[in-house]
Picture 1 (cartoon, rainbow, N blue to C red):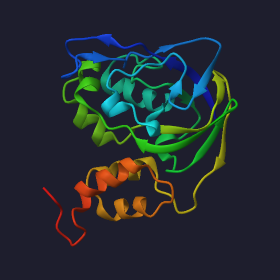
Picture 2: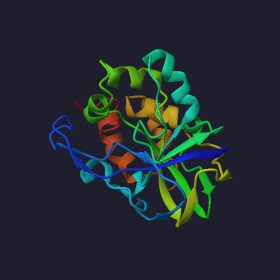
Picture 3: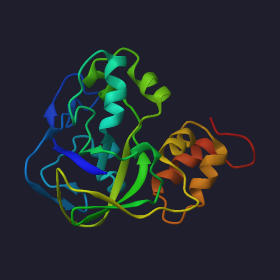
Picture 4: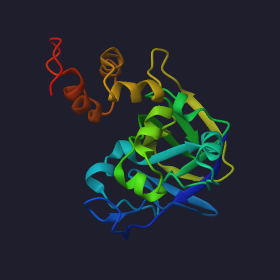
Length: 215
C-alpha cells in the first residue's frame, strides 16, 4: 500500500460552487515532500470552512482502484486528485478502512474519521448528471482523516497500518449509518474517540432514541 499522488488546491471563485460560490475542490498533483499540519497539508486551502474546516476532515484520501472502477461507468479518464482528494492511494482499501484506524504515511500519523458525503459542489465540479445519487449508491466514498502526529509525506510513501480497532465500523458502514442505519450509528457512538460530528449526525438518525426518528 502506498501513496500514488499528493494533491493540493487553492480556493477560487466559481459561480457553480453552491451558495458560497468559492471552492478548492480542484486538487492538483505536487512533487516532492509536503508538511502535514494539524489542519491538513501545507498549501492546501478550503473555501467552505463551515463544512470542510473541521480537524477531523484535515486530509481526504481516495483509492486509484476506485477511480479505475468509475472510469468505464463515467466514460472518461479520471486523473489523480479529480475527486478533490489530498492523497490518491494504490493498494489500499480506503472505503474498507475502519473508523479509528491509524496510518503512518511518511513521518505523519493519520486517523480515519468519516466517509466523504457528496454535495452539490462535487456534482457541479464533475458535471455529471445525478452524481450525488450515483456516488451514494456506489458507496466508494474514500475517507477523511484527522492528523494525530504531524510530519511530512510524499508520493511513493508506503502506508503502514499502525492500529485497526477490532470492533470497528468501516467507512462503507459509516456511510450507511449516515443515511439512516440506526444499528451502525449506535456502534459508531460506542467507539472511543469518535468524531464529535457523529454525535450531531446521530441526533438526526436516532432522534430521541425512543424509536422515533426526528424529522
